Every structure is written in C-alpha cells, then in structure tokens.
Figure 1 (cartoon, each protein chain N blue to C red):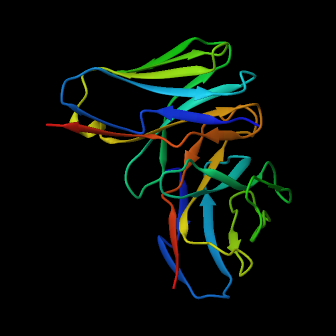
Figure 2: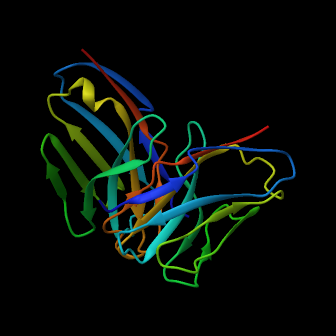
Length: 110
Length: 114
C-alpha cells in the first residue's frame, strides 16, 4: 500500500529565503505526482503536476522535481514571501486515486 | 466561473443523526471524490466516482454513503454508524480518474458532533 511522508512537518523562514520541501513515497510505480497548497480552513489548490515520465515542472517561483527510483520529490520555492505561508501537500497516484502526504506547514516571516 | 461548491460550510450533528453534505461542480468533470481531513494527517479517501451511477469505496468508507445520480452532484451522507465524524470534509473533482488532470477542490465542510 502506498504511503507518503513529508519532511519537515513545519518550517519557519524569514522572507526572501529559498527553501525546499520534501516528499517521499514507498511505491515507485506511480502515474503522476502533484503538489498542492492549502490555506487554513480552505480547500486545496493544485500547484504543479509531474507526470511519471517527467523529471520536473516549473511555475513561477516554484519548481518541483521527481525521482521515481528513489521515491522522492522536492518542491523548491525561490525568494519566499509572506503570502507563501500555507500548508503544502504532495500526493501520488498509481493511476487510480491520489494518496496524500500529511503536509508541511510553512510560515514565511516578514 | 467554473468550480466546486460545498455546502454548508459548517455543520453540527447530534449523536445518532444522519447528515448530508452537498457537493456540486460545473466543470463537466467525470470523476468526483470525498476526502476526510483530520489535524496533522493527510487527506483520506472516503468514496470516489468515475461516472454517473457508479461509485467505489475508498480507504475509510465505513459509516458513510454516497450517490451519483447526476454528473454535477456527489452528496455524502454521514450516518450514525460513523463513530467519530468530527472532521473537515473536502470534495474534489478531476477530468478523469486515472490521470488526475484538472484536480479541483471545494472549500470544505467542517462537521462537528455536539
């Protein structure tokens, strides 16, 4: 059964720092991987979707990489801003449903 | 604007009551999902539906029921058999089940047992 973990559970950084969030999954036979953002008390917003044949995806200040063989993905946020404060969740799909990690709670301090 | 609407935003349930959470989408998505979110945990899948009149149990379906009579609607009933229903419930949809393209979430319903 696929299991997804995320490290760290929480992260607090000063504004302007570059940072990396980590996601690990136990079964490398995935179809795709997504990173989501969740603001407190809200639903999730999709940030980046990486197909299994891809190594990375970029959107603005966000870059996500995927290493299927090692069961890892990273989300890189460049020049962090207070508006980036949220919980970031990764989710992997084996071709049917997504399995979600517990998330990393990010606080960017002004 | 296209999207997913969940209602109500807050719901209070007495012991032994059944309650129904509404989820409506106007994205023309085939697949719809219900998740439960508890503090410090990832989302857990309750039920999902690939097409109208078809739905499948997820990882924690016990104590819940769903229907998919219309493409746009996927209501979730929390029955009295669900012993610990207090949680944040999220509905989602996607273009199809397999690729997870266009994954869109509603804003959630917070259910509290009183």
